[in-house]
Each structure stands twice: as structure tokens, then as C-alpha cells.
Length: 109
Length: 112
Image (cartoon, rainbow over all chains, first blue to last red; front, side, top):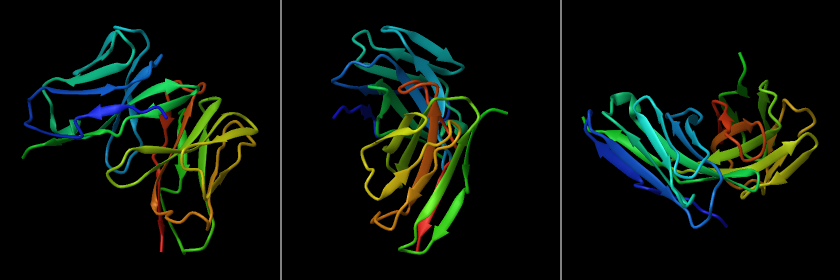
């Protein structure tokens, strides 16, 4: 079946650092979505991408839809402690969403 | 306020008992989904419904059942046939299948 390969699996960062994560697929998706999940909560939609090559920002977050529609990246600038959590990418396929395995963001003490 | 509500937040059941998890949305969304999440893992699709009175199995439907009698409601029953039911269950809805999904707060089910 279709899969989204999300990397890295986890990241240890210092507060104030920039963060980058990405998702790739062998299949084309019409929509790419980025979510964040805090512990014990449901995922929250951060950014939705609809067009190949589209670059969209939401505060310190920036995401881009790859030109081939097979990949996307998410950047977080100047990370802060509340950025800790799990970030998921998702793509639409046949009226359902295909999910990446998540990138866990951990702030170094 | 519009949103998607799961209840209860925590649920404990004895092994061998069926249990039903509630999911209600007032967003007027056509599509609804149930996911299972195990510790440190991603989301796995149990069932989804694109319209009232219709639903399809996801990747891990065995041991689960659903109904979609009303647009707003998509309850999930975890049956005694589910071999390892302890998990975090997430319900989501979207305007249509494959569109942006909005999640409830989840139900953590523990079977003892």
C-alpha cells in the first residue's frame, strides 16, 4: 500500500535552533498536511498544502509542497519549549489520508 | 463552539467485555474516521465513513465495529475479539474524504 516516509524519526534540539523535517512518497498526493500532537492529545492541523511548489507559513512554521507532489518539508524557526511534540505529515489518497510515522521533537535541557 | 468530542477521556474495562467509544461532531462534516495509536507509534486507521449509513474497513478493522446512523455520530465498539485493545483511540472528521481532518482529544482505553 501507499506509505509516507517521514524523517528524522526524532530530533534533539537546543532552544532557539531551527528545525527541519520532511516526508517523501513514491506516490503523488493532491494535498499534503502537517499536524502536531502533544502528549495525550489529538493531532492539531498546522499547515495544509494544495499546489505543487506551494510554500506556506504559519508563524514560525514554514512548509513546502514538492514540485513533483511526492514530498514535503516542514521548517520551524527559533524553536521554543512548547514546540516539543510529535509532528505528522499526511497526504490524501482515494478519499482517505495516508500518514507518516511522525517526527518526535525533543528540546535539550 | 464547533468541534469534535470524544468521550470518555479514560476508560477501563475488564478483559472479554465489549466497550463503545463515543465520537460526536458538530462541524457538519461528511467524513469521519477512527484511528488507533500505540505508545511511540503513528496513527493506524481502523474504520472510516464518507457518508451516513456507509463505512469501510481500514488497515486494522479486525475486532472492531462501527455504525454511522447519524451524520454527527460515529461510535466505535471494541469487541472481545480484539486481542490487544489497550491503546489510545482517536476520532477525526473532515468535510469530505481525504480533506483536512480535525481530531478529538482521544480516549485512552485500558483493558485489565
